[in-house]
Length: 225
Length: 415
Image (cartoon, rainbow over all chains, first blue to last red; front, side, top):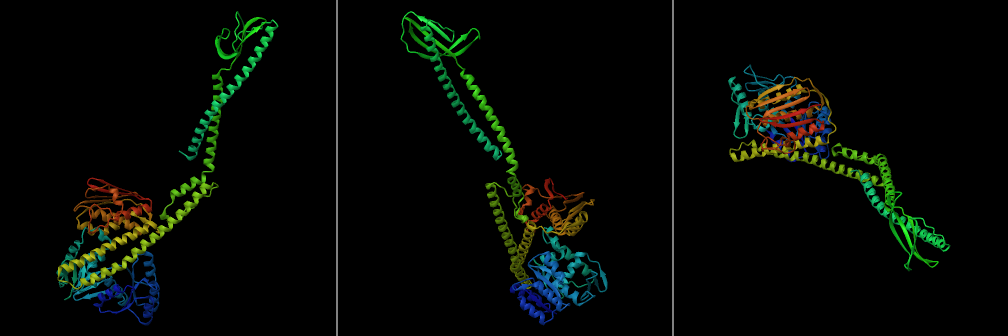
C-alpha cells in the first residue's frame, strides 16, 4: 500500500508517519502544495491524506486532481477547520473522509483502513483475524462459523480494536470513536470498562482467544501475540 | 422630560420674571403720569377758583372744590396730598388728590382746597397684572403648539435615528443607515454615529477574525501534542509515572481541543446569519438524541420518563437543533444523581427537561453565562448552556431554568 501524506506541519507529518509505519505502508510525505502536486502527478497512491491549508495553495485543488488522476485512490482530508462547507465541498469532490485536527492517531489509522478496504476490496468488505470473521457491511461477527450477537457499541469497539491491532488505545480515543459527541454526558470514562468486559466475555465464551489486554491507567490493546 | 418642553419651561419661567419686572415698571410709570397730570389740573383749577373769588364768585363744589374763609392770615406754601374721603352718596371711601393753597383775596383770607378723584392704585395694578397674565398664558399655549409641531416635524429624523440606534447590533453585521435632517446638530450627530458604527463594526470584525484564526491556528499545535503523546504511549512504559503523565497530557490536550471547538461554535453562532433551516418533527428528533445517550443513562442507572406526544414541527437548522438537544440531555444526565429521575416532555411546542440534581449554589440563570459551574469536573467545560442560550437567542426562543427541589427544570418554548 502506498500512501501520500500532504501536511505542512512537519512535526505532525513525521508523527503520523511513524505511527503508520507499523502498518507496513510505503509513505511519501509532501510539505507544500507544489511538492504534493509534483508527487501525485508522478506516482500513483492507494491513499492520500490531504491537509486543506497549505502555505502555497488550497488542498481542495489537490483533492480534485487526485480524483482525476486516479479513481482508486482513497482520499482523507485533514483540516484544522470544523467547517461543514469545507467538508461537503471536499466530499463532493471525491474525498472519502474528513477528519479535523486534533485527532487520535488510532482514529486516523482506523479511517485509513476503512477507506482502503472500501476502495480495494470491492464488495467483500470482510476482515479475518485468526478465528474471527467480521463482515463490516452486514455488521456481523462469526467465530469458528458461529454467528455471535453483538450490540451496536460492542461491534464498533471490536472493529476499532482490530483496526488498531497491537496498539495501545487510550480510553479517550475509544470513547470518541464509539460514542462520539455523546461522550460529554458521562461523568468519567470508566464505563468503557463495562462494555469491554462484555465484549471480552462474548469472545471468550465463543471459543476465541483472549486478545484484549488491559493497560493499567491507559486503556486497552488488541494483540495477537 | 422632553428637550423641547424643558427649553420651553426655562423660556416661560424667564419670561414670567421679565413680565413681573415689566409689571412694576408699567405700574410706576402709569402712576407717575397720572399724578403729574392730575396735579397740573388741580393747579389750573385753583387758579380758576382764585380768579372767580377775585370777581366775588365763590365757586364751591364739594368735595371737589372747597373754599374756607380763615380769620387770620397764614402764609403756608401750597401742598399736594392724597386723602380718603367718605362719600355719603356712594357709601364708600374714595381716594382723592388734593391741592391746598392759602390766598388773601380782597382783604379776606381763604384756604382753597381742590380735589380730583384718583384711580385706585390696586385697580391699576390688577388691570396690568391681568393683561400680563393673559399674554403669558397665550404665549404658553402658542409655545406648546409650536413644540408639538416641531416635535412631529423637526424631531422626526432624530426619533427615527434613535430607533435605528436601538436596533443596531454588531452581530447583525450591517452598518447603521440613518435619516438625513435639515437641522445642523442632528446631522452632525448622524454623521458621528455613522462613523462610530462603522468603526465599531470594523473593529468587531477584525476581533472576530482574529479569534477565529487563533482558534484554528491552535488546532495544529494541539494535534502535534496529542499525536506525539499517543506515539509515546505505544512504547508501553513500565514506569507508571511516565505513563500517567503521558495520559494526563493527552487528557488535557483533549480538553483544550473541546474547549476550542466550543468557542469556535459560540463565535460562529454570534455572527451567523447563514444557517439553512428545514422542517423538523421535534418529537422524533428528541427520541433520536435520547437514544444516543442510552449508554450514559444506563451506566448511571437513571430512570427515564418520556412523554413526547406532540406532533409539533419547527423550522430549524438540523445541526443546531441537535447541538441544543444534545447539550440539554447530556447536562441532565451528567448533573443527575445516580439512580435519579429524568423526565423529558414535549407538550405541543413546549419542551421540558426535569431531572434530579444537587441544589445550585447560585441562581440557575447563571449557568447560561460562559464558564459557570458549581464544581469543576474533568468532563465539564462550562460552555454547554452558554451554547444553548446562544442558539435560543438566535431563533428568539424563550428558555427558562428553574430549580424546584429536588428538580432542575429547563423549559423551552419552541416557535
